[in-house]
Length: 408
Image (cartoon, rainbow, N blue to C red; front, side, top):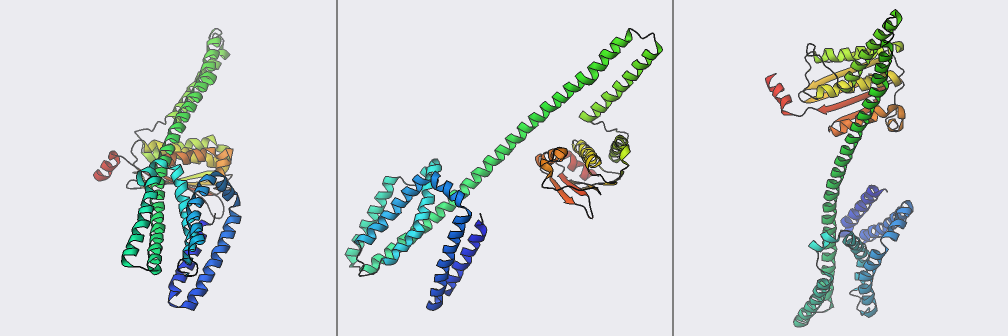
């Protein structure tokens, strides 16, 4: 929480402190305020994230204890046994403030990503071997050249800074690697969720079709069968005719619902206009005017002409049901391989953050999921002075669409 703001403040104050190093007095003042501001930010961060910190401490207590021992013991030993009178190593203690959190991060990552660390790090035995050999080597060099305490101070300072720099680079490298891995896993998970959602939709479609056959077709056929035995009566014949007419109409409507039929004798614009006329007749009692705008020579390759047929139908129907307005504006434009559909109304509008949780607008949420699967965009905005504006942008992909544009 507030990570970006805290990082920005720390970087700015550190930069100012570094710039002021040319003047001792100014540097002292900036260094003092750097510690004060850092302390305040620590307190604020702990207070704002106390639940997270408590969870983190409980979860990573072993890693933190191990990191504390590995860093505190060497510094504690130094404080106990070094000659304080010479006062040449005293400021080494301040490095503990930097080394402990870096080593703690390293320990946590090591425990959680052991396979990756093992490929990039030395074993514990080899680490201690390297430390012992380095200490003995530096000591022998100092003895051969008769070096004083200043030489050891410079060497230890250099080693510690190199160690800090090494862990910073290691942290950045592991973090980038984990981010790439997580992004790949998230993409695979999203793909899996999309496939599951597609299977669920197919099952729902089968269920709806089964219910339709049972509740509509089968019941009407049984009714007609029962009436045939009394077909010598004029009123019964009339009932049979009406039933079969309604059955025919119902089957045609359901066929259009499952797989729209676009007449090849009409342009795509005319097919869409016919769809809007059917919707207007269905909701004729609402007296809502519909304005549809698109080019007469609009061309969408398969299956995009079906996709936008369903989008226009769903969005227009949704406006009739929920807008409570008097006008609907629909605009469909195409530029090369980009298609843009805009549906506006002058109704009550809709809060873009709430529609997902509104059962009456589940259709909009379903459309947004479909658009996301097609790697498109779906934007909601309030229309002034009132109403709702929905914008959908899709890219037509496929060799046939490009062939058409070349030959156009």
